[in-house]
Image 1 (spheres, rainbow, N blue to C red):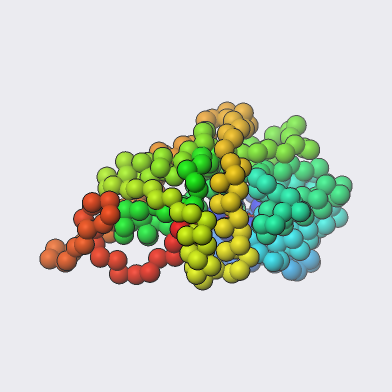
Image 2: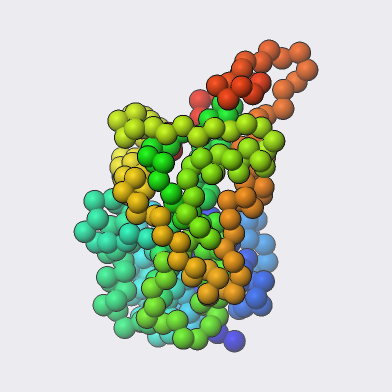
Length: 316
Ligand SMILES: NC(=O)c1ccc[n+]([C@@H]2O[C@H](COP(=O)([O-])OP(=O)(O)OC[C@H]3O[C@@H](n4cnc5c(N)ncnc54)[C@H](OP(=O)(O)O)[C@@H]3O)[C@@H](O)[C@H]2O)c1
């Protein structure tokens, strides 16, 4: 059986890829910085300790490996980290790399993460290693960044100009990655991955209301109203720039096309927002209020506990 090395294995998507591969009985090795933390998160899996900045650790991890899932954290070191894996994999004779990229990946992009993905894709094309590029749309899990705000106010702010987004559940990204890593015939392909249909933030609010049993209202912000919220959220500059830019792409309709690739590749329909809202309802539901505690009304008309903390409302 071909051994598969999963990099970024403790990441949000990476850990789900490990699970999806294990569920299919694959021979999985996880490349991790902190084996104790990784074991606690991933359970019983072969761990290869190392760091993208340590080429010898990459060479050790790749011994006996046939295929690689490639994903490092976004940030200024991303290109160096992912190209180090590609170069080590080429040296080790790896037969396939499946790279987690992004829709709109482009080395000329003004959006940092899209640019970094584009640069890594270009490096991968120049290497001798057969590869598959997975380019997902906006993740549904991004909504968790504003879950605290929704829970406390019943309001979902975002500068989308009412445009639709074919947002995807990361569990489907992981299912596609696992399917591609375990099958033949995908090398050289690029897959744009989306949810089953394009939806508005009003649709998201309706799904969250249905799942939590509490009113949730979507409030569209202008670009000018949203900018200080991104800049004031305490994020690294590149991330604030990237997130603000992503909403610019959304307002330009850049995420409105649903592709159907999840169904074609996995044989199962992509998860929709209703299922996501159901599975993550607890994060968006108002916190329980101890008896006798004062309540304040929200703009949505729902009685909610007074806000006790400042949430990072990245999306608005
Ligand atoms: N959000 C979206 O809407 C969206 C859409 C499309 C594509 N994407 C892409 O999805 C990707 C995110 O994937 P993810 O959620 O799985 O990533 P993640 O949660 O950010 O995880 C990053 C992983 O990289 C590991 N790592 C960081 N530095 C390392 C180092 N020096 N050596 C070894 N490992 C290191 C981390 O390990 P530790 O646990 O040790 O930190 C972690 O396992 C990004 O590339 C993003 O651009 C996102």
